[in-house]
Image (cartoon, rainbow, N blue to C red; front, side):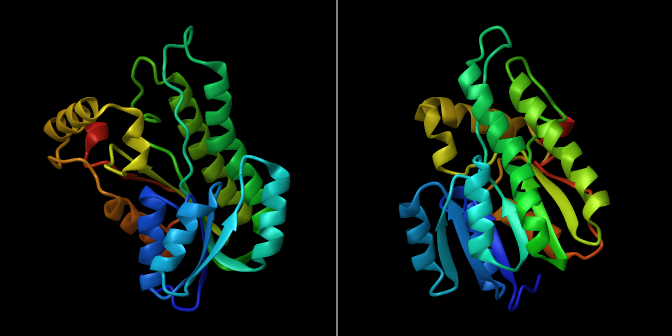
Length: 239
């Protein structure tokens, strides 16, 4: 998983999986562009990378912001987007504003990133996006999440065909103890969710950001992997 002298763009690099991936990419020799809406956590990650990280504050759900970001980035080798937005609730109850944010984050943002990033990406480069276990395994109240994850996976397969030899893949995590994402739940509810998932999943535990970062590195660096949805869920999709 050698990224020596490569320019890697990570959207959502300030926390959780994105932060873990930024650290892993820098350790593998990459120069990392750290992208997110809030500058403060990106600055903190840049300090951890010891000169290998450059901060770019941008809201990738806005096309003009993505266009400006790509112009500022110039040429790059790999782009990974970990951005996510939840919209839970049964279809008659789900907040439409939350649904629109989820669609913007998981569908429009990847479209903008490919649209404006493809002219600048290396011929042997890759785009990697993040879906999730609710794509193949919906539950009551997950309709919007299932919609955007499934749509993103289909988009990635189409782009793998359209953009080749540039590779396009998706990483699909299960439940991951990724920190800030779970702050929406009370500590007791979060602990119960993790325990229940660990009890069901064949791997016997929830995931860590490092687990998912390793999968993203594999998708980026294996030159024969494209159009693939890489499930990294401890077998959670099976049960």
